[in-house]
Length: 107
Image 1 (cartoon, one colour):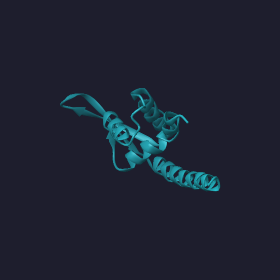
Image 2: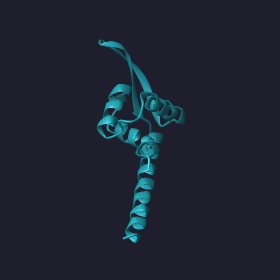
Image 3: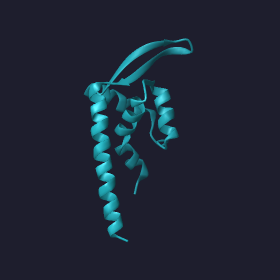
């Protein structure tokens, strides 16, 4: 089983979960994902996910000037993003329970 594909499949939920803690900019979000084990995802995948989430209305962003270089684009959840996270967590919990039941049957 390809672990990278599994992680990509739950990337939306992971990003929404991180942003539920508070706004974050791309590099910081990437570091948080890597620390959580999403280290095989490229920057393009993560930034593409943020762009798609913004288009879906789940995330909003704002540019903030930085004294260390170019402006940073900070991302935060919208009300729709919080609803999507809640729905995703519910579906994830159901999926994990279903998979656990199937695995238990094999014992």
